[in-house]
Image (cartoon, rainbow, N blue to C red):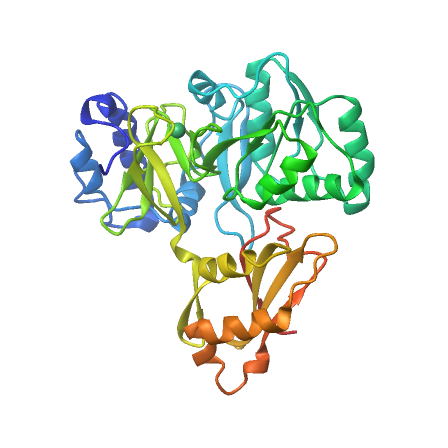
Length: 406
Ligand SMILES: [Zn+2]
């Protein structure tokens, strides 16, 4: 399987892809790139079109400046987690009506806490609000809170007997870790909606204590594609059922690309690559048809002194260490050369992992670290911290951060 839909299922929607191709042809910066491209009438023809990278989409949007047929056109942060904000567009409603046709994690009886950050041109808070609006539930639009505010808000949420909460997994981990630390339980919480990062299995440990009845309900998407697929507690956390208005393709290189078949779509999403690798597979939940399994970002291999460091493998190792709840790799560069690698660890309350032993193990077992730092192994450090390095601009906590030495 290399497409999420059959030719027959995609036939009508390909008219949208042909219109998008027409728009991309008119972008001067793309030159001759689409000149030879055939208007796709089959999936095979679509797969022959050049893929779009993040920067391409921003280049196209700067030229196209699309606006919604009805209502307002919203501008959101789009693309890369570093540098100046790039812009993506969406109409009011954020395409959630089509998502709601197929996926209804919330219902009228829910009291839903929207804990995705609002403001700073972040999209997730608003699309979650759009979904909640369609479900007719009660909404508490909380957004992000500061460290000191958690206990008070958690008390409020417990009093309100909230039944659902949504956020990025790293923010949800803060909520449940703080609840656990403060001894606050949310026994009425049954649904945890998530989007924006991979699910973190360590969340289950805190949930088991704080909200044992809570189950995860995930969405996969980006500010460019908007919501592509969703899953239920019965699906593996890395597997999503994609919607009929979102066409997913897996290239020979294992990279996913996305094509919008929604006529209302404002971003020109035609074979758009998020950088995620994946496969189309059957979901163990038993629902028929191909589901998209996301295998993580290909760009999670970072160059350190000319060698590739596999961030996910390294973090998988440190997060197996008892007491470690999450790890992060911080690479400090000077003049583009990696000077130092710090592995930062968040730990459970009272846990004291043996960081010296872990560091020795990482150095001996990780070819890139042992080879690149053979003359200065002291520049590889493992330490416990109170907080990982977050990105104030995107509100996300990345698995690795590269920063310039000060
Ligand atoms: Zn499933």
